Length: 396
Image 1 (cartoon, rainbow, N blue to C red):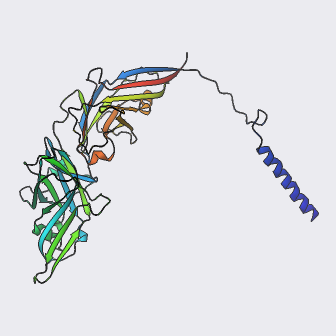
Image 2: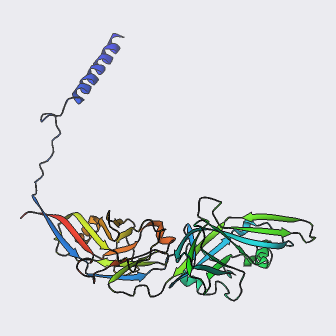
Image 3: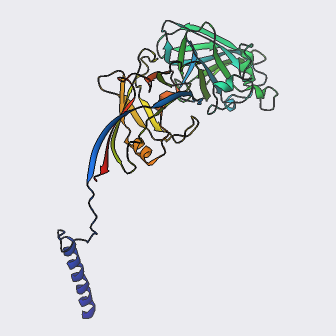
């Protein structure tokens, strides 16, 4: 027993010595030895360069966001595509549909607030995907423009106003048939197409909205064949998106166009070959200037920030880095955007250099018609895009 106690005491003593040793402040005697690294003196330099080239291109991107646009304003046009989930309708092959009403809730508008919103409703002829549908897809046989299943015409009211559209009851009855019926394949949904008299684009809440009270809904009033029972039901689950277009947007070679909802994006190039390969980029301030006369913004465009990505190839179809810098308005200015893009410039120093891609920042690109026009490399010296670069190189 004595020997066991002695061994335990010896172990505790050793542990206490180690603990006290670990609590000592580091000194030259107990510090870990590290190899001596050579100190390289660095020189900090600064230069300012301007954009050397640039271009704007149309990029057909699917929208599928929280707001759907429909209408016409100037050269802009938009159509909304939506479908209620077929599985949520009861199978009632013999029912008579007395009325079918589509309800939409306002979210935004583009154009003259006193203008007229006018559109027609058409049944879709085949399946579609809200994650891939674009303007070009709609210009085929998606619907028959000669057969109208509903129509709407009105002025812009409250931002969140509810509008109702009476739908063709024969189309609504097709939603109620069983899967074995020959009419079942007609349950592809509908498209809202602006008429020639439309002068404003309206934004309506989509199925993506968090609140069930704001999403699109359809109310069906039905009666049995005997005419003895009437019932009313509302359905508000489905899929939707919108497609938009504007032609001839990038008409001025002195401007770079960043258009949401269609989409137009721009590429901007800077020549950084004057920076040596070993340069360390400490800071690179990008400055862009907006042309207020040709930009198209309204009070729903609370943020006009520009996402700035590094291009990964020379073609417009090339990928760009997922992460981006965000060029925001300088405090106190309504037209000047800046941000630090040191990461981009450092990647160009290493090479290759395919330039920057400019696009509408965030989700706004997929539910708005905001247009920001920026002066590009052909602009005068006071408004041309520029880069102020601070970098370090080893001293000679």
